Amino acid sequence: MDKLILIVLIIIVVGVLVKMVKKKVKTNIIDETIEEDILLAVEPKNLKVFCSTCGNTEVKSGEVLSIKDSGCFSVKGYTLKGEEVRLNGNQLSWQSSCQVVKFQSVTGTTNCISCTNKTDSKRDVWVKYSNWVTFAWKINFGK
Image (cartoon, rainbow, N blue to C red; front, side, top):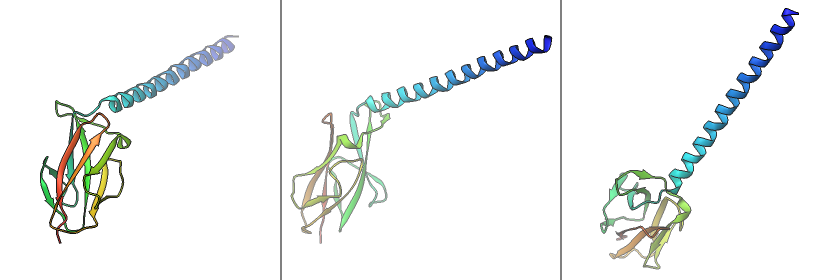
């Protein structure tokens, strides 16, 4: 009889421990999901553009870059305190005032840009996030 009681107690203890572990794992998954949602909910106040074609250097606002054929760029978002925030690529658009400037994609955090008319002209280019935060620069696709 004592052995039977001992076996029942062991089964109860193991059952309780399994429930506690499952609850902890579920809580951690929920916490990670909430943290992910919070990171995506923070909208950038500043954008920074980096040119991978130019050695992954940061592009300055209004700067004129001289690029022969095409240039590849990436964008990062920041809070006013300078903390990096995760950007939703679908909310970031690439634009130009010149019809001859061609983008590999119209949205996304990375893009390659080329020009069908290789003249010595400065082409205005900018990226704009859905909250209207914009970063602009110029590209000279000279011959």
